[in-house]
Length: 219
Image (cartoon, rainbow, N blue to C red; front, top):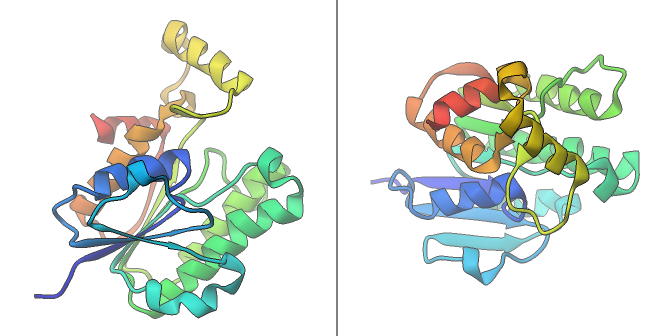
């Protein structure tokens, strides 16, 4: 029997960490290869997890680690963390696309990626434009299935305080009736659940999931 392998990118982030927790106990995969820029916390390690700290600028040297039928990509940054637009573009477009390209060459069937609400390659907003350009580029790769998740503001337990997120939590709790589902914040754990649900569904072709659909899938 062929070994069932999943590849996870971005495991040290909020959504990626939630994906890792679920993949560690997911019966559909025998092994989970995790590629990160910094070491995983010991609390996230398990016998099923094969973790590698790599240099994404030299991803071509890691082709042997990119052989997986299913790839979960939660790799990304923020303009604030990246520091410059150039660095943000490198992480959120170049790194993701370069990995996806190699994965496609090596037979990946299902590529799942966390994008963002409002992603549009023609947007005047830099963040949204980069996410949109990535989506368009991924669509041109020969994956059997491409699942794109477009959450609104992502909620979860973060180490750092984010004022906008706290305000959004308050709004979602007390003003939910007035906020359209597509625009309501979504929990990182729900995104991870939805990604696994998409894998289990086995749908062929392109699928795009907005926040309201993500929450519904996670129920």
